[in-house]
Length: 238
Image (tube, rainbow, N blue to C red):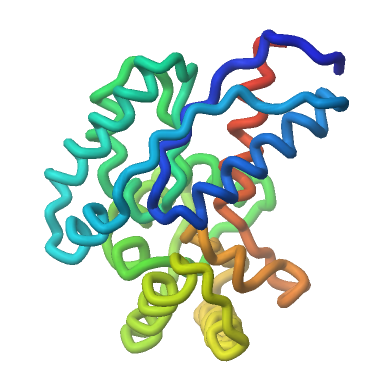
C-alpha cells in the first residue's frame, strides 16, 4: 500500500487514564505505519478528559453526568474533523449510548470489536477482567449476550482487588509482580468456572499480563482489538 493523504481521521476519546490513551496513540500510528511504510502515520485527534472527574462519576455512580460530559467531549472530536470515534477505556462504555446519541459520526463500541474476535474463535463463554463497574454491571455482559457470548467473572473479593490494582497501580503506570500473579490466578479461576477465553476488559491490563503468560487460554486484549479496528477504518478510504 502506498503513502497517501486519503486516510480517515481517528478521534480518540481519552484520558481514562493517560496510560491507555498513550497506548492507543502509539498503536494506531504503528498500525497505520505498518500498512503505509516510510513515514506514514495516522491522522489522529485526541480529546483527553480529566480522569479525576471520571473517577468521581464512577465512585458516586453519576453515570448520567458522565454521559453528558463525555458526549460533549465526543462532539468536540466531531467538530475537529474526526471521521469516527474510539473511546480509550472499557469502563466508560457504560455510557456509550449517551455518547453515540450526541454525535453523528460512528462510535466504535469496544465490546462489539471484542465479540467479533471471540465469535471468530468459536468461543461461547469468556471470563472478564476489568474494573468493578465492567465486571459487575450489566452493560458489558448484556452487550456480549447480544452476540451470543456468556460471561463469568471472579469472586467478589477478587473483583475488589482486581479493581484496586487498576485504579491504584495500572492507571499510574505501576506494574508489580504480585499484581501480575493475582491477575493470572483470576484467569485460572475463571477457567475452572467454564471460561474458554478471557477478555482483558480494561485498557491498562495489557501492561500486566499477555498471551504468553497463559498460552493455552485465549486472551482477548480489548485495546489491541479496538486499535486494529480503528486502523482498518482509517485506511478504508484508500
